[in-house]
Length: 338
Image 1 (cartoon, rainbow, N blue to C red):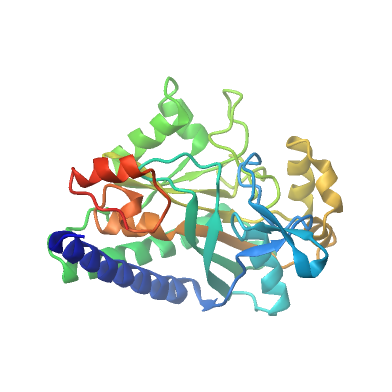
Image 2 (cartoon, rainbow, N blue to C red):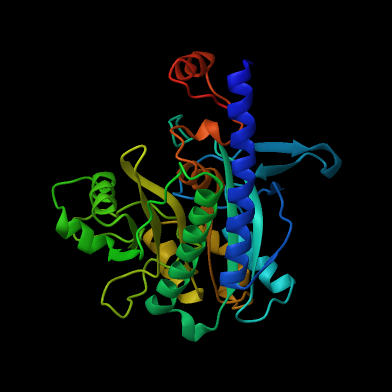
């Protein structure tokens, strides 16, 4: 490693620490969360591990001390967090935050994707009366304020990293976005709306739109994407998308939403043709109304660091597995992967 690479790497590591500490503290304050520990693996066959879009394969391995029972590396902690809310007896209006570490081997390598995933995973206990779009929007605004605060802290530390987030985040439903850009693909729509507004929350991820397709996939058993909200559209969930001025593209940093209740779980399992999941431990608890009503989501730690520090590759802010020729190619461009 050259002295230039050393200095660049150390400066980046210090900046990563600033971003992570500033944002997590702001998120805890804005959403009234308690920081807790979380697992990297859980037993298979419980229904607790997330299916994400329903097609990603989790990493599985046998545990010798448990007679070779299979365990899986978590893909996210949406369901686990809801169970933990109950176990810790977290009151309404309070929640939990944890550092999630996961492996997603089906991810394709790209400047914004690796097989290693690090997230701030949070879950908030809410009353049933707060299962509404207006409440969802307020939570999104609170998260956005934490992002703005972090951006200012980074700028104060390094004036070359000028803020780019707009004053407010814009809300738009996936159906409205489709009608605005009917000839574009979902990812192209995201790019155009992010370019237009700078920061958007796309509502209703998972439900079929008027063109017969969802904006993006969503598993049926954590976010509620079927309930009709007060604006007449389906869905109480969505994605936070920022305009990335370095990559000049839309940049998703979070998927989140109000979670399913027994009624919407049943409906969404039918829509996804996976009604057999009703027999799993997690789903039984939910169908029996044994779990708290909640809202939650995950915020990509490396994604947020990448955005705040104006990096061109996610490998600049996380240690991952990359092809050697990719490293060499990037180093010629002055991009050093951790």
